[in-house]
Picture 1 (cartoon, rainbow, N blue to C red):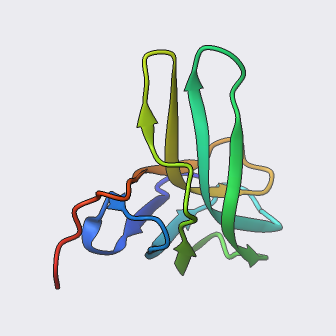
Picture 2 (picture 1 turned 180 degrees about the vertical axis):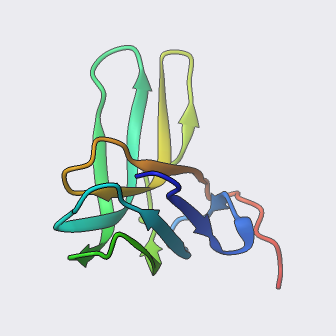
Length: 119
């Protein structure tokens, strides 16, 4: 997915449980795709097996070779982001296209104490 990217509204990276992550996904596809998805997910990194769970998604069917899509994805109550000695829990918004190997990802933090800028 050449020249593809995700923009999070207000360039935020830290969110509290229950908040909504909004933004836009922009793509340029080298080959045809039946669909693409913007996914909100968490995954583990570190020792042991890697776990992952998609908690919300928005699907675009039959996308044009170039395009964009506005999205809003709701964060659950947990699990919270955690950077541990042996395992970390990480959050991200990801853009994935059918039949494409590469995904585009923006890392997020889910923390009940996240500092949120007042508008």
